[in-house]
Image 1 (tube, protein in one colour):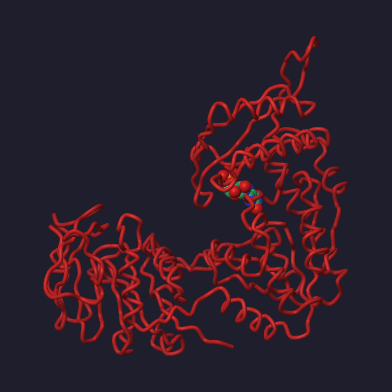
Image 2 (cartoon, rainbow, N blue to C red):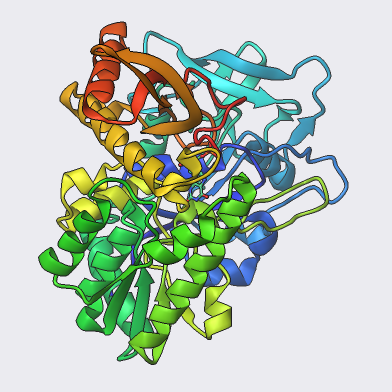
Length: 518
Ligand code: XMP
C-alpha cells in the first residue's frame, strides 16, 4: 500500500481551519486536522508529517492553560507554518514576544507590502507592490524570536509575514486560507513545495489505497450497505464493490416517498449496470399505512426513521452473517472540533439514517470516504466511472417527499407531487440551470384553491416551487429565476399535472426559513 506524504494541521479552534485542509487537498497534498490537545510527541512520531501547520484560534497565549503544540513540533526538522494564533504561539515558544491587543487589533481586509530580502515562500505572490490579506487578530507579535526576520508588513501588523529561513519556520499574522486573501493559495503552494511535497494525493492513488484498505479490514466477511441513491452512499458502494465484489450486498429501502422514477433508476444502475447484489425492499405499504392520517412533522420524521431502521435490520439479517456495515461518512463529519467555552471538547456528528444500528446488530463500520470532502467524493465518483448525472444530483432528504407534503400525507397527494416535481426539474434542466442550484423541488400545500379551466370551475391543490443556492445547506438563498421561467413552469405544471391549479414560488432565504418545508 502506498503511504502518502502527510501534512499535519494542528487545530487551535479557528472557524476556518477546514479551509486550510481544502487549500492543501486542492494541491494534491494529503493532510489531516487534529486538535492541539490530541497531539503529543508520540503522536508526532507516529504521524511522521512532512510539514506542520499551526492554525489560528480564538485564544490568547496569555490565557491560563493557553493551547500550545508539543515542543517536538519544532525539533522534527520539517517546515512549520504558523497562522495568526499559530504565529503568536511560535513567537511565544521560540523566544519572541506577543502583546495584548490594546488598540492594535485588526479585523478584515488589510494590505501587506514586501519588506527585507525576497523569500521563497512569497515567490510570485506580491502583485503591484502590495497584496490583499484577511486579518483577524487581537494580540500581536511585538518582538520576533531569534532567527526570524520580517518579509511583509501591514499598517497594523509590522510582523505580517516573518520567517526563519534556515529552519524553514514561517509565520503569518493573516489567514491565507480564506477567500478574502485572494492569492492565499499561492502561499500554500509555495509552502508545500518548500517542504518537498510532490502532489501524490490524487483520486487514482486514493482509489487504489482505499481498495487495499477495505480488503485488509474486511477479509472474507460479508458487508451490507444502506443505499439511498445519494452521492455518498453510491460512491461508497461502488468502491467497496470494486474491492470485495459480491461480499457486498446493498439494501435499498423504498419507503414510497421517493421521486418519480427514482427507485427504478437506483436499481437499474446498481443491479443492472454494476451487477451488485442489491435488495430492493419495496416497503411502500408499510410506510404509507403508518403515516396515514399523520400531520405532525416531528411525528412523521420519527415514524419514518424508526421504520427505516426496522426494515433495514430485517433485510440485513436476511443477508446472513454480515459483519460490517458500510457508510458514506465524510471527513467534515469526523473532524474533531475544539471548543474553548468549557475546555477542549470533542464533537463528532452522528451520521445517516442507520445511526445506532451498528451497536444493536453487532456490526463494525466500513467508512471508505472518511478522509474525503464532498467535492473529493464527487471526484472519486468520476474516477470510478459513475455517470455525471448521478454525481451531480441535488441532495434528497432521508424522509423524502413526506417533508414536502405539509399536513396529511395521502397517496393521491404524493402522486400529484411526484408529477409536479418532475415537471419543475425538467424545466430547470431544459434551461441549463440544474448545476447552479443546490436543491430544487415542489411542495404540495394542504390547501385547495378555486380556479377556472376551460369552461369549468376547479377546486385543486396549490403547490410551491422551492429552489435555493447554498454551499453547505446551512444557509441558503432563493434562486432568482426570471419571470418568464416561472410563468412557463407554472403553465406547464397546471397543464400537465391534474390536481394542481395554482403555483407559487417560495422566496424565503435560510435563515429564517429552512430549505425543506417541514
Ligand atoms: P433544512 O430543511 O434543514 O435542510 O434547511 C438542509 C439540508 O438537509 C436536508 N435535510 C435532510 N436530509 N434527512 C436528510 O438526510 C433529513 O431528515 C433532512 N432534513 C433536511 C435538506 O434536503 C437540505 O439539503
